[in-house]
Structures are given as structure tokens and as C-alpha cells.
Amino acid sequence: MDAQKDLIAEFDREAAKTRKMLDAIPADADFNFKPHPKSMNLGQLAGHLTDFAGEWALSTLTKDKVEIGANSGWKPFVPATKAEALEKFDKELGGTRAALVATTGDTWDRNWQLVWQGHVVIDEPKHGVFRDAVLNHMIHHRGQLSVYLRLIGAKVPGVYGPSADEM
Image (cartoon, rainbow, N blue to C red; front, side, top):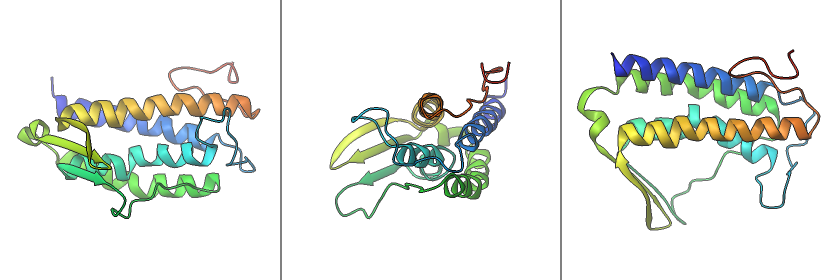
């Protein structure tokens, strides 16, 4: 088994499914829509999903530590439209995939940390972080987006087979 080859193939499949879900957002969708007061709005969720094929995944692959604090200058990407979300997703996907292909051997065993507001939130080997905090996290939030789509009356695309809207 070639774990590197399998991980690249899995990333390609899951990124394509995530793009499909982002593309299902109606062009006229209200990006301020929230299904619950504690939920992200649609724009925040769409922006968060773009990071799994872009900035978040790339940082996991190319850095050993990410620190986000009051002075870090980091601001989450929050698109106002479906077009903005897809543009960022498409623009960053190639660079992330190239970094994934270049990440081999012992690099996967190096420790990776996320420090949020001075507190270590993630402190694990890079391979675990990529699997859990990138791939699984993307799948989780893609599932959330499918619920948002249903609630706003949009068709939900099939991801692991046809959806009720495709049958």
C-alpha cells in the first residue's frame, strides 16, 4: 500500500465533493442566513470550507506551527457570494495539492501545533493533523452545508451516492 498515493487520491475526491457542495449554493442565497443563533452564517461556513482546500490545508503541510492571536493579522475569509467562495476554492486548490504531493517521508511524522490566543489547541504529528483537522474537518462542515442547503430550499447534491434530490 502506498499511503502517500492513497492520501492524495482521498484529498482529490473529498475536495471535488466539497466543491460540488459549494457549487450547489444558489447564486442568490442570503450569505447571512443562520439556522440557529449559535451557528455560523452561510458566508462564514462557505469561507471555512474553502480553507480546507486552501490556507488551512497548506499551512498544515508547509508549516510546523500556526499561531493565531490578537496581533497575528489573521482574519477568516467570509465570502459574500457563491462566486467568491468558488473563486478562492479553485485558486488555492492547486497549490495545496502540490504541497501535498511534496510532503513525503519523515515530514509526516514531524510535530505540528496550532496555538490559538496563546493556548496550544493542536499538538500532534502532521499526518494526524492532516487527516483529522483537514480532511475529516472538511467532511464535517460539508455535512453542515448540506443541512443549510436543505433549509434554504436548495437542492442537495449527492456526495457518496445520489441524494434525495437526484433520485
